[in-house]
Amino acid sequence: MAGRKHPILTVLVILVAIALVLGGTMVAALKILAPSSPLFFHEKIGIVTIDGAILDSRAVTSQLVKFRKDKRIKAVVLRINSPGGSIGPTQEIYREVQKMLPHKQVVASMGAVGASGGYYIASAAHKIVANPGTITGSIGVLMEFVRVEELLKKIGVDLEILKSGEFKDIGSPDRKLTDRDREILNRLIMDLQKQFVEAVAMGRNLSVEKVEQIADGRVFSGARAKALGLVDELGNFQDTVELAKEMAGIQGEATLVHGEGKKSALWDLVFRSGARLFLSQINEAAETIQYRWNGFVPQDIKER
Image 1 (cartoon, rainbow, N blue to C red):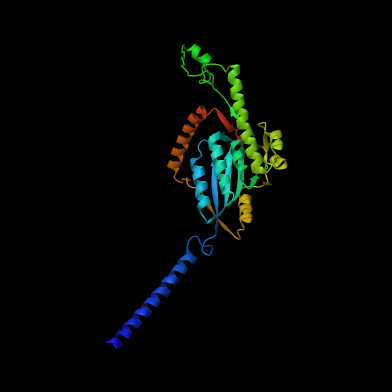
Image 2 (image 1 turned 180 degrees about the vertical axis):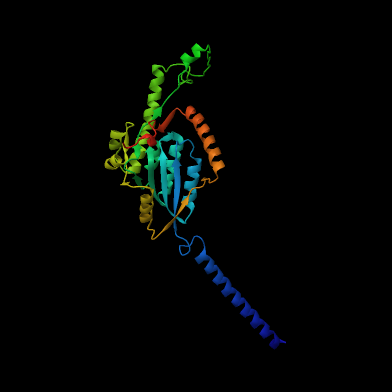
């Protein structure tokens, strides 16, 4: 009986050995041919788009977190075409870019405009690329109020406000600012201005004093910004991608991975654009203090 069992055991051992070899081969093949393998796909560069007024940071910060955790993404390009916007969302995006720096190479590419809050975010990147004619700079704080007290008087409307403190209704549209109101608001503006200047100085490795010299809200061309040390190189989006590849040590072609949220359906684009425009108008009316450039639309500037 013992002699009969030996062939069976031998067959079982052989089958187990074959299974182990086949299993190991399959695991190795899956690792080599997996989507994350450089032998199967090009290296990847993440593209994060910041377009228009900055009113909400959630979509951008979510994408930055996703790219930071994705080991297949070797570098990130911030494509910025924005005049800035609300201070809180701007600082949230800036902070998330800072968190990315130890893990990925980050390069900012500015299109038609990268001013105020748009530049604030760009300054956190390792490098900034702008077109010679990009409108940038505008390092400063904007606060604006709508006053309708004269209109209310004409139409016979009067507001009565009960408040817990003297300054609780500061900036209310039905009354003028008092001298004490202006003093408080100016103090707030200078505090936020100081935060802006320090963020740019840290991100660009410049002295606070040097940034303060040009932090009066003025805008610059991309070429002038480069001369001032606010921009590293002049070039377009593709030039920025090539720079990101070089900084990340990517050889050959790279696959560009765009952030989520791009919609191709025409009806969806029209619907969402209309809704976004409507909501932005409401939000802009509510936000009275911003890192925003309030100038002309860059597309209106033409060479003649």
